Length: 244
Ligand code: IPE
Ligand code: IPE
Ligand code: MG
Image (tube, rainbow, N blue to C red; front, side):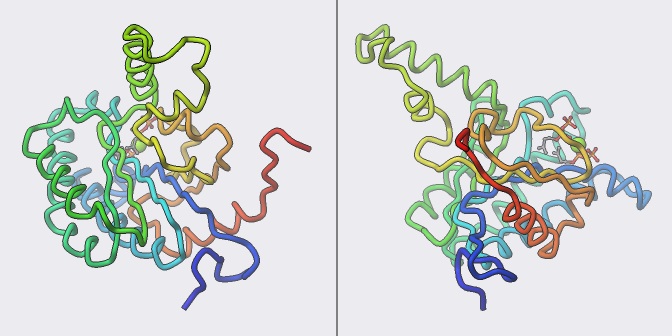
């Protein structure tokens, strides 16, 4: 059994406290197998299950997974509806087990655009697991970093208007406190699968100093060895945060 917060290969190198993953490549994984995209997304949900378990075992405290972006509505309606169904399926099937394993679930993103039954499932997941502390799983669903920042700005502007905040006292901490991720430490590492090298509007504020790790593996194939490889790459980097 591994010591929490330490990598398997180097007991002195800490595993990242907050790991964020852009789970990409489900469609290409399916295309390679001449399967419909839907089955790629389904295989992606199995990878989620696996990685949540592995990340918990490795001592990760916060795991944020990008499940559906605010731009993914541009996809054909059938695919959007498949992705919505998979969130339903994931919560219904895995919530009890996540809860048993001490995982706290939180969904970030814009709930207003989601069907009422999905919002109810999200509420159920968050309420049931609220007191859990082994690992915090954040699922970014109908999430876009620019929307998140704009909505934080709106709330700050409302408070300024109401006389609760003076404009000159607005700092990065003020903005942070109004993001969906308020209270959660910034990601130490952002991993993107499938060979694409961009953030696609994921945690754009929070990733200011995250280490970025890109792998060619398609998300449905992503397993413990890839997670460990990403951690080793993270551990080999020198984080300076602007200092010397
Ligand atoms: C990632 O896989 C899942 C979501 C974006 C919801 P994609 O569906 O983007 O897969 P590719 O990029 O087409 O291979
Ligand atoms: C980013 O992947 C969104 C998720 C993983 C949920 P996309 O496949 O949608 O991103 P782009 O379109 O390649 O930038
Ligand atoms: Mg993609």
